[in-house]
Length: 85
Image (cartoon, rainbow, N blue to C red):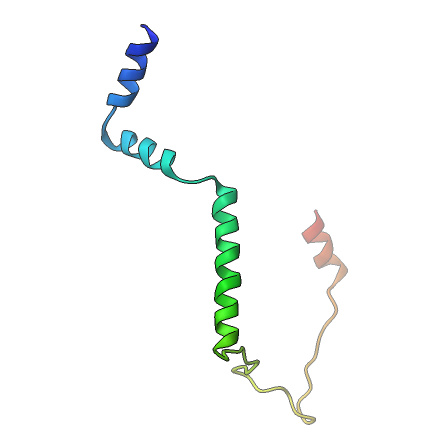
């Protein structure tokens, strides 16, 4: 088969896989998509900051008072061994 016939066969391929091939060839490089998203986040952050939008630290559970104490148990060595092995 000559190169021209092979090129014509590839161009003429249709169906679902042909559509995937055409769409995939039009997608930009992943690094460019990533950079575009970074720029988008920076611009959106600047707009939100200018509009006065901020994040609050309110939580569903209130912080424990002096009467309530939170008990934190240290991790058992056997548990750490299971994670490592």
